[in-house]
View (cartoon, rainbow, N blue to C red):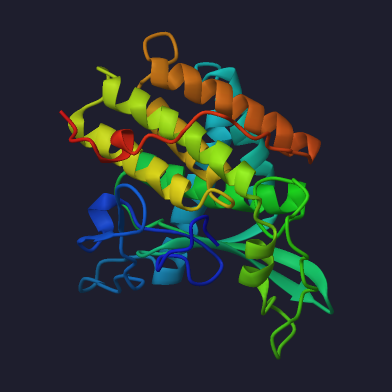
Length: 299
């Protein structure tokens, strides 16, 4: 589920398609825009007598190669250490997750058996042509899985004491899915924690607009993803940080030449360490959110 509840966050833990794959933008409550979800898309176009793998084989091939790319990133000495550590975390998670590709929105979900977690499932945007977009989206969804495993808070990305009582989980008729997962996520929200996360992501928006290493298109893409995190602060903090970290690596935007990359590295490293520890208590902040950085025209 998301932070500031919006029409984009209906079921499970969903990320909207990239800009190249979306409908016209929808104005949401708060700063900036988000993109509306589309239905899943695919192609069964087989040409004459040419030997082409069946669609399910193509899907398996794509998802395997993208998870393998995460494996390659974690082993590559040219990849910054902090990103290698995150890729190692996500690769280990991915090996134990059922992964499928989609032409629409990605999401992570849990399947239960007799009230106990049976397995994690991930749908990611494996139909995208651009590898950075595919791997970034897979990293995003696997981060949801890691957060769920490490914090055990229904995908909420902190372990602060909830302000409200969290109701017991109830299950749908087949006992495989939690019926009241969204309610439990909302009950786990902590206003001061969400505000501190929004302020932190907002500061990254400022650095994004000021970064001369990014193209106009890249600035828009990064800022939109940060806006998505701001609007869903209780479930999309770690996810957008890791996804943008992957993008910057593919774009060769490194901490030695970018203040955005420097601060992102610091946040991503701390987030990774907190996930590994299984604990994150987000402290309140006196800093204020500045909507200018979420709405200012990109030069």
